[in-house]
Image (cartoon, one colour):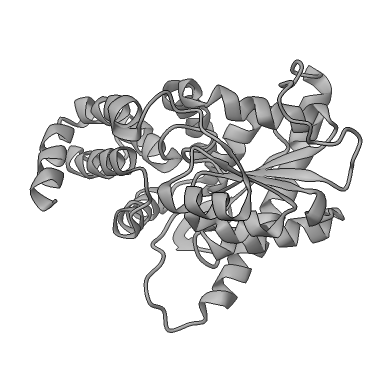
Length: 315
């Protein structure tokens, strides 16, 4: 489990930190993919993909697909759902969960990643897991997936990922979420593996520090670039999928970029460059997507109503 702040001025080179984060994520993803491949051989194919895309090209082994996680594959933010599960297991106090609830409410209602909120969430997550064993958090993560995440997977995006798998291509999650959490989600969905934020651990115990920085924005592009080089992929034949304008660097790397449930900035950018768009939301963000999920977190924390009221006062 890993997380920390981002998008704040730094004395060190942001590019160097992004490269470090990307390379660490790529190394972790390649290790986890070996286990995923073995599991896939045991379970076999997971059914036919959608008829919609004429892409991907069947049998193109130098092509792969890269999927953002939050609001692309899954409704909401994986880190916040993980926080709910840790609270249930008494990893931290109710006051901290109320903050998680407010951050999740903002994320779902606004539909964008707020740097201040996400930094706070990652700082909190690092402090919470410091001193815990990686194996312990992985085991808990499996339970949390079933409790809070499994029902939030977008069927449309899942079908797109399956189309790549059915074509014989590898499919990777690429996310700022902790690599351990991302790996669990990828395995549960039958994907190849995951690129995620890498937390430092010594002898299997979290130190409370990151390797590089969170896998966000340019760092995602560096991770994809590093993995593609290691896997012998041709990025011009690869696809990438995201909902956020923060992922334009990653989307711009590949020959087949897709905007999925896009925010306003990504939608505008995608239309200007004639990228493909897919929107699997049944209505506008707050009306049919944001409010129910945010309210679910708030009911647990007892704090979302106050958080939403605070948001209104700040507008």
